[in-house]
Length: 125
Image 1 (cartoon, rainbow, N blue to C red):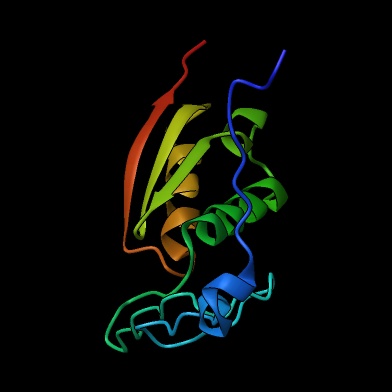
Image 2: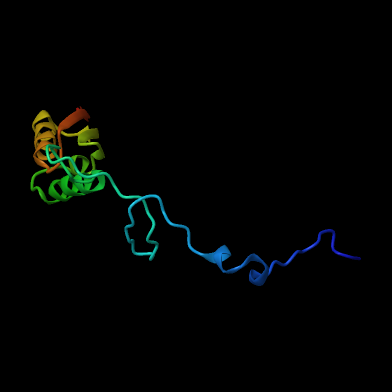
């Protein structure tokens, strides 16, 4: 039974030497770890911007401080931390108002934080 499709092979001899010339990018060239050199340039950073810290870096910094702060409960150390564009959201249970205030203060002191949304709940036993 023959194949239900046909294969056409094109030769570079028919197309000429310019057929495989690299295209000139219309934007500035940057390099990356994969060796691709025609990625678009990132816009320049605004020097007046309050923070240049990534959201993941902010989250990691707050988590590191929470886990090493003595006196915090397991709940407070495991508060959900979400950072987006410098705004940190804190969610989850804590043991007391004092613990809640400590977690908020730690988040506010992290580099790159412009605001904190406190959605933590104080558990009463």
